Image (cartoon, rainbow, N blue to C red; front, side, top):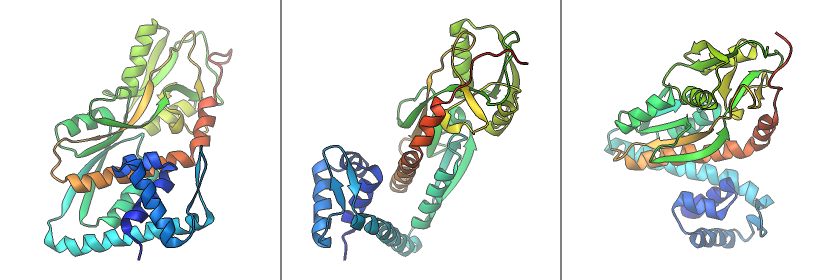
Length: 308
């Protein structure tokens, strides 16, 4: 019989690729996590990680164990939750999600959480991160995962990306005409950051041609060549490329992808579990797509052209 604590430490190290990062997530010391991995290897009679001074990789036996470990931990949690459910009233967690996070990896994490914790109901609201963060502060939401340009106090940054001016990969810009811009309606952090950068740069040769209620409308407008919008590289489809900041478009601040949780939650334990589920799913997704993000950040189009 495997100790669930040892399996949990093993899965965390495998997901993070680092004992140090796993220790942070598990709220343990690095030496404690290393000791748990050694105990697991002693029980198995084989090594689960190949370690060097620079990297940590799963062995063949470790790769086989990983899928079993996830299943064992999930089943254990389901048993505990189902047996405990009749004794406790259902818990509801209210999650706010900005469009930058409304993607497959997040919804998969929420589906996994629901399987593990059927006693917890997660109610998701999608919207603009500025408004969602306000709801968290007022405790009408328990948690917000969203994109901001200025992380407030109490926010945990999952990752950062540069903001870019995004335009059609096929259409051409007319340097003699005002730059056509498209933004989400206020209050949108990308809109605020872009307008502040334009004002600070002294740029005047631009005009807003579209104010939208969804990111999908911005992408469609930019893809057809109607307007330039502001996105992150991870949010850019192949139909778009970035315009390098230069003479008529200024540099933009970075975007932060954050988790922000309400203070003094009425359900601190399931909320912490949900935060961990989202965080770990995010790290796995980022690791699997790191190469694609770097390629998108390197893709650019000339800032002006002679076409119309």
